Image (tube, rainbow, N blue to C red; front, side):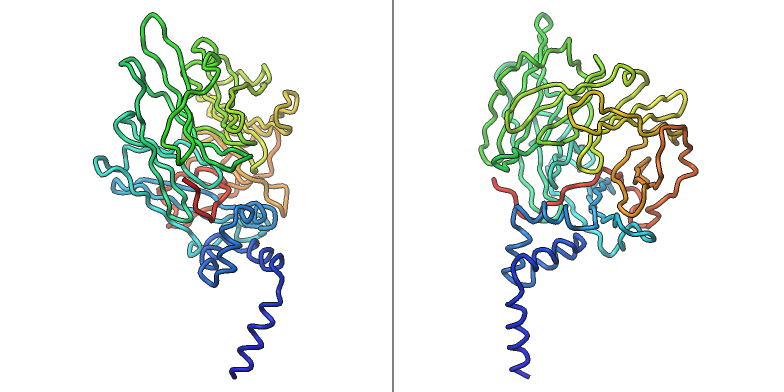
Length: 378
């Protein structure tokens, strides 16, 4: 028996590093977390910075992030979507990964809000602004760090919003904050940035680009869409999209079409980890127009994906394209739907509804996430 065990170890050791990595990259998210505990070699593979990229390319599972507040406690969930499945698109609820952040003991979790997700990390902030730190969580490892506010000198500053991003060169995570000077005779915006681990806020060069008259307060009120190394937000003031690149630490604008300006409430999202999506909600008509930018930064690549009659006066958001068909997974009012979209009018009540599991009740659907199995540097 001992010889058999030795031979098994021997043959297993003969399997190359690349093959083991390829096999592990095809597993569901929770299974990958469990495989970290098998041996040092598997642990090293899974926590490597490259593993998440390899898994994103090889794996049929796309993690969807959800969150909710229950009895004043915030809770997150990572749920796998099988893009190749023709039957059970959502993996078993037994495969769900749950995470509860440890927030300020002075406040219940209900006073914190989710700002945005970036490469598997989530940024949370408190409405009390200067009094409480911002919190960055890794939902898979359970790790979290806090960033103190360290308010600027003077009595005229107010915090407008934040954003979490990652430098594509150094892989370091950074927190961006937008502030407004409230002097009546000289109102203007400035931006500060902090690299995680530095414990120091520094001014972003070129603050003049954050002009109230061109961007407006509406540019900072919605959660950001992180794509291609930049955080994007929509400005209601002039119907434009501005972005902040975390490697160059510069602001710029993403072009839009004039006809996209029509409509009411608008919000930005990321579709299939590759495209920007702008949803425009016509509240009076209960309709949502979905625009998608097929080629990043190219104005003429914006196309109308679909026009949908919605429920509850909320937007319909495309999340990812299913690989086994032409169907697209949409989220709407904390539910998931499948549809083969067209630019013509559609009624959401005719779509295939998913996510009827009891475990998902009360959770808000956020977005597909680029899960991170390794701890982030501080």
